[in-house]
Length: 253
Length: 338
Image 1 (cartoon, each protein chain N blue to C red):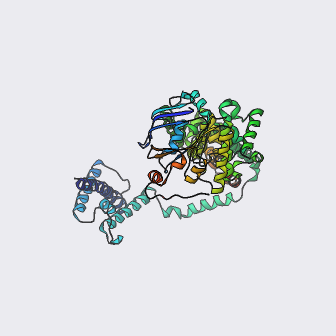
Image 2 (tube, chains in turn cyan, blue):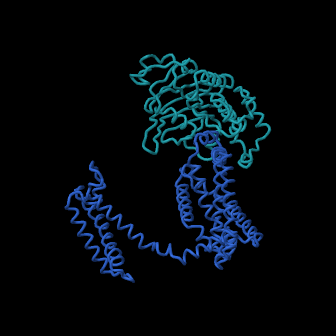
Image 3 (cartoon, each protein chain N blue to C red):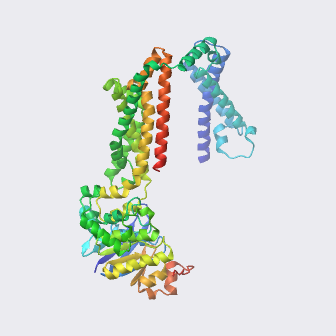
């Protein structure tokens, strides 16, 4: 088992209960998709897994290590084994694609060297390889703010891969992209999952994408896990339960 | 109960207002302007008398509908302003305030238009228009001193402000109680330093290190640290926090998170603020010179003290040119790096 979440609970300082008693297991090499309305806790769940948010109660066990209570260097070590990509890409806009990818290696670089951006030739070579995987080798020296949305997300995937992660968390990776680009980015995630064997947990909005890419689906509603199963099990009834009575499915092709 | 509390509050505020009106009417309008008392004396019993008058007036008006000033302004009404009693009473107090103002700032048209005064002004303006170019070399040297004083003050302020600004930024100091305390302390110290004018700092430092450019530089530097830190930290508070999350999620050290997540986003605004600060410092350096901070300001003060207006004329021209040049340059550069 790669990741085991038990009785996870998250309450924000303002009193909002974002997650309540989440139990979830993720197998190695899996492509798991989390669905649910905005505000259902999908994002919070991912950020609790990689400790961007502290966990209120419960356990997160990653590669046989209990990580929710880790601090300092041990926590950063665990974080470096998980890559993450975001809806708004979260790249350093003023820097080149290459530098952005290299930030994925910060954990393995000494603070002094990284302040001067002295990455080793091996690391640079590695970064080029990662850019090649997402098909952006020729854009390595391009400043990120000159790239398109889809290209930015691919740079973000390369940055995450630079960490040589065993788990990749994707927080609505295609929510700010157009349909065609969405498919291309999802295809790269699929490639990463199948060819590099990286386990993926991905938040998605569109069920059509879920049916195409997910091996397994879980659904969150109001911070609780209400569905777990195969994508084809989500029928009309489940859809209403997850998205509310008045929801209508939108297709993305 | 709540209604009564409000009534009491309006009554007390009105009492203060009417006490003020009574003092002004009695001392300034009556004794000063009508009786033309030469040396106005302020006795305690005058104030007590006015206080009683004020309370009585306020009490009276609180029984007449729509004439309590504070209540009037806190209620909505559709009558035009000039038909509301309380508004007319308010205007009356406003007029009294203007009379007070004229009295206290000693505004006098007689002085302004007197023949001897006009002659003096004419003499000065005339000599200002005939600057004495004999002291050109000396004044240019003083001007260079001023510019470098401002430059050093700005340059030395940069590293201090840069580091301080991170501790004075709310979004970076949310973590723990210690960070919170550091944030509060840094903000307090910066606000305190900034609220003391550089002119005052210059006086303090000219006693400390002696009159001259060094004292002026220290004064400007201290003030620059305070205001640059504030501007920098506000810029840090406005950054997009996304990249911070992303860098943090790679397992980077907090220092690396700041260096890659924060610094690239703030470096250009910082540069722009710094150049602007240098521009401000050159202007301030001139003023600071007047109290012994060195440079062209000190020279100006010396010539002005001995009424050598032709020399002052030249200095004013040089100052104007410097300020204009710095202003143009800094706005051009800031435009470019936006």
